Length: 130
Image (tube, rainbow, N blue to C red; front, side, top):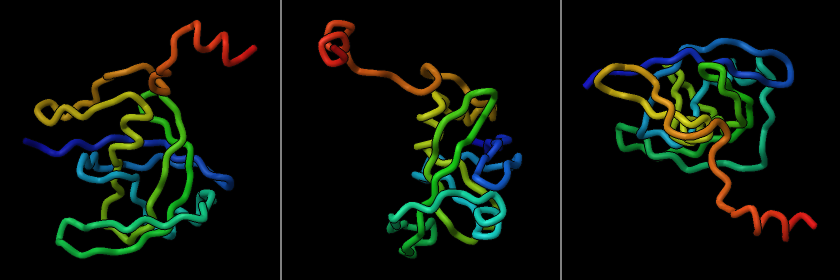
């Protein structure tokens, strides 16, 4: 079982940048350091998240919002602020973009349409949007 890295374009209010991230299916959120978050001008939410680190420590992290793009697929993503040596790409962003990591090949595989699924029938939608 190997590590999967992917280039992710992260867009904020001030700038955008390509960031090489480790795909971490044990992480809920994208994790970026405070300097990168500030440089890009990511939108701070009023929320924090209690996170359990791989070494067993529990921390509270501020949560930001960014637009991310992987292999031409774009979508919104929550970003946890934490000093990390390697930026992490968590499962929420993977699922939003419709990817999974193949640990054998190290490649990203499309598993769903870009933007995810809408769980309504046409009839339900037409009744809702009258």
